[in-house]
Image 1: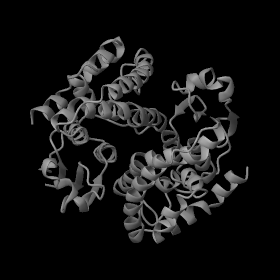
Image 2: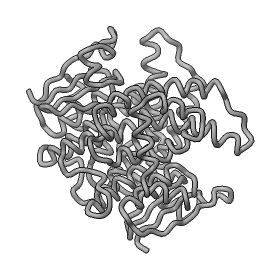
Image 3: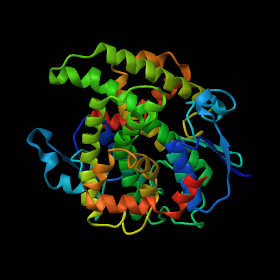
Length: 210
Length: 210
C-alpha cells in the first residue's frame, strides 16, 4: 500500500495523523513500533524519523515525520478527497494557519504535559505531581479563555467550517476529558460545545473503537 | 501602508517576520510595541493578539499573530515576489513542512530558552540558571546532531534551496552565536557552514541594520 503509518496505538501525535487519514477516507497500512525493544531507534523508523519517535509516514517514496507536517501534507495532497481541511484562499488559509500555530505552541505545549502527568505517569509507576497539574491547569485556563472568545464569534477555530486546526486538538482533548481537567472545558460554554462536536465526529469514534 | 508589523526590534519572533518581508522585498510599516512598559498587554495591541505577545501583523483587513503563521501567509500570498520560500509541489512542500515543524517543536524549544537564560535574564537583573543552561545545551546538541546528518546530504534543510524552514532559525541562531552556545554550532562543520550562510544573507543584514 502506498500510504504507511508507523506508530503506536494510543500516541496522540499518531492519532492526529490517523484521524486526518480517516477524515480524508484514505487507505493506509498501520505499522506498530515497539518502543520496549528499541524498535524506534532502528530501521525502518530511524531512517524515516531521525529523532526516533512516532509517527513516521510514507506515501510512495515520500518519507515524513512530525505529525503536523504529515497532516498538512495529507490535507493539501488529497484536498479533493473526503472532508476539506484547508483552504485555497490565502486569507482564509492564513486564519487556519494562525489556529494551527496556536494549537501547537499555546494549547498542546501545556495540554500534552497535563495528559502525560495525569494519565501516563500512573501507568509507569510514577506519582502524579499535583503542583505541576495545578500550574498546568492555570496556564490552560488562560489559553481556553482566548478560545472561548474566539468560539463565541465563530463555529470552529478557523471559521464556520471544521478545519485541520480543530482536528489537531482532538486526541489530547479526548484524553483530558477523562480527567479532572474536563472542568476547565465545561466551565466555558462555547469551548465545551466545540469540544463535544469534535469528539462526536464519526472519524474520531472510529479511531477510539479500533 | 497595507502591510504593518507591530513588534519589538529585539524580539526574535518579530525579526522572523521582518526577515521574511525583506526576503520577499515587500514594503511594510514597522509599528513599535514597547515591551519595557508592557504595551503588548494593553490596547490597542491586545486586540490584535489576545495572548499579548509580539509580533502582530496586518495586511489590509487581514490581522494575524504567531510569527510562523505570519511568515507562512507572506510566503504563499507573495509567492511570486522576491526569494521563493515555499514550493507549489506538494511533496517538496511536505519536506519543507517537516523542517518547519522541527524548527518550531525541537530547535526553538531549546534555542529560545537558552537565549532567555543567557541574554535576557541579565538584562532584567535576574541570574542565569547555569544548570538549566547545561541541560538545554545538551538538548540543543542532540537536535544539532540530527541537523549535521541532514546538512551532510543537502545544502539547506529541505533540499538544495533556501526555504522558509531555514529562515525561521535565523533570529535565534544569531543570538546564540553571541554566547558560549556558539561552540555547539562550531563543533559541527555542516551546521556551522549552514549557520554562517544564513547569517550572511543580505535580507538578514538589512533587518539588523534597521
